[in-house]
Each structure stands twice: as structure tokens, then as C-alpha cells.
Image 1: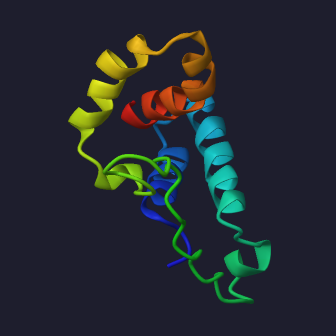
Image 2: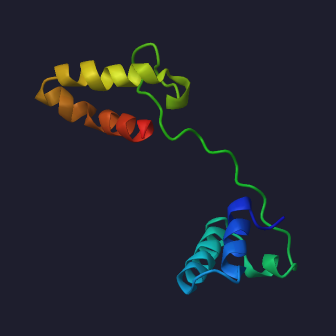
Image 3: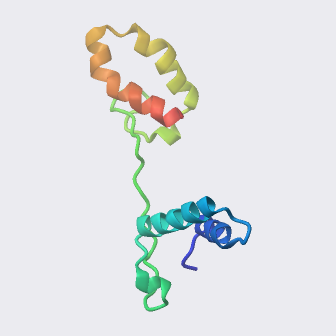
Length: 114
């Protein structure tokens, strides 16, 4: 199937006779943005070529630095309570130089926990 579940829902919304003009425009725009992001070309929609293969698995976005018991581990393999401890206890105890050095880690942890 060329359309994923989200795209199918958006198409149903856009073609619903009760859809407001703004809903139709927004849904149509979102469908095409999604198709473009997935690399679907127009010929695939017309049945002239198979859809592209699924993308290879991504490497983890967040990797813990090379220190401590979680050295080099992806964030999703680390207990969330450890991150909360770092933010609540460890970071506040750092001096100004330490805060500057480890600010990137604090930002990544904060983003990861959202």
C-alpha cells in the first residue's frame, strides 16, 4: 500500500463531503508533505513504479558520553530516573566551567525526556 495510515486518514478527511474548505486544504497539503518526506514520487501514485523500500533503521539519536556505567549507551536503554537525577542533582552541582562543558548533554537529556 502506497499510503500510510496517517495519509489515509487525511485523504478521508479531505474527501469528506462535510469537510470545511480549510480542512480540505490543510489535509491535502499534509498528505503531499508526508508523501514527499517519505520519498514517494508521482509515478508511484500512478502505479508506474513500486514504492521505495523502507529506510534503513536509524542509529539512536542520543548516545550517552563515554563515562560512568552508561558509557556509550543509547538513551532509550538507560533508566529515565538516572536522567532526572542528572538534571536535578548532578548538573546543579557543576561549577561554571562544568556547566559550559556539559550544557549540550543537559539539552539533549531535556529534549529526550519531552
